[in-house]
Image (cartoon, rainbow, N blue to C red; front, side, top):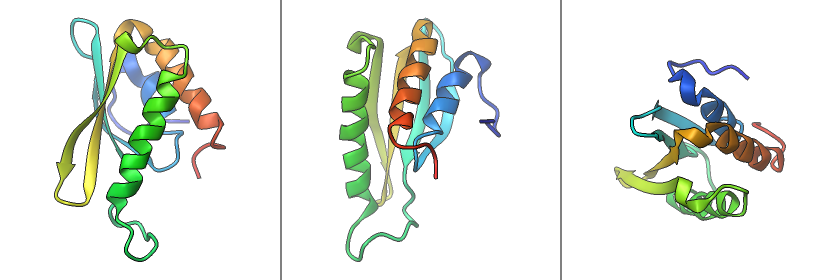
Length: 123
């Protein structure tokens, strides 16, 4: 997979892995200082066609719980990463922040790739 954006090379493996998860969109990233790398991401798109009456916020909240659980059940130590709801854009979209110790970049990318593989890759 190729990333078609400017990405800090130190965490590009994590960006590539995140973009393997269907409906995940990486928005920005920073390999950071003092060993804290950050990736901002969104799940889904407020313009998606969903069953009538269902708001994208519900899918995004479900994604947060699901992805956080998958990361927690991986071999990563929880003190080395955080998945945060960083903001709500208007009334229709949640933005997430994944912060992690840049010394575990390879392990983070591997864990996310394994999560993506269980879903069959990006549609």
